[in-house]
Figure 1: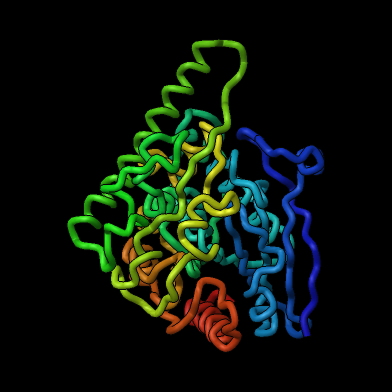
Figure 2: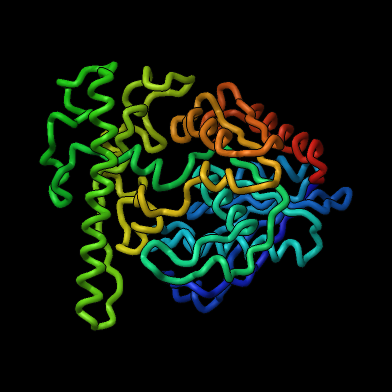
Length: 379
């Protein structure tokens, strides 16, 4: 038997708020779903986080609670809306969650970053142990070297990619050369053009990847120019929204021979061409300041492998061989980033991104988490 309660965690201040909901701003709360085992007295909490996803009903909460581990799914202030997300504010939010749990009966807190949460928990623990970031890439608060960021006692990256900027760049459609005309496309870089047959040639893959990075940097240069113009205006306007088309065009979605795995073709949103322009898929709407913090390959601070190289606590990286969003190579990159020996890479054969339709593999993952906690005296 397990029990569930809703936690109201005070929202930290110190950075740009940029939250649309007035109710959320006035409430000043981060919401979390705490699942406890009714037997025993768990002194460890596993805190599961993501920059924007709603984790109040995360799939691992009940399986962990049934095994005697208190599991908490927490939302950041940017729940369901990353258009103005500032990654450094997400770090403050995770810190609020860790602090709340340690002040309310838990001796140890283990961070689990699922999917896009992998880069976030890596960044958080890096800054909790060795704070170094004094401002956002746009030069704004918060100063993480002055923030209250209690250290977590362990880090788990589950079905995670290295960071939002890196995966976003891998997904950008380089055939778009005019940001306002997404369907006027460069045929030489158009993976959807039937002239480029699958499997794609090594030469095409190399040109495509380079053009994705170039497009990211082109947008960043435009963003910097826009921010400079706003500053020169001097009328108090500090940010503007804009749209990015074509954000779901990773060649691995189209060609299963690239980094072959057990994955099914396509994306989390279905057909790649449709997902590429679907408003609900990754990062189509953003602000100037959010772009630098969240999506810019050269500016974003959320580089998971880099920050895992700065942590001292045990790290577990779990990945699925049938995941078509966070690929096995992503899990291996996170694992390789850890510079100490208290690390483990756990492959879940046949597992997809959300364990959809795979209850037995979810149970296997939960078993592994508990075994790993026991191994490192984290329970």
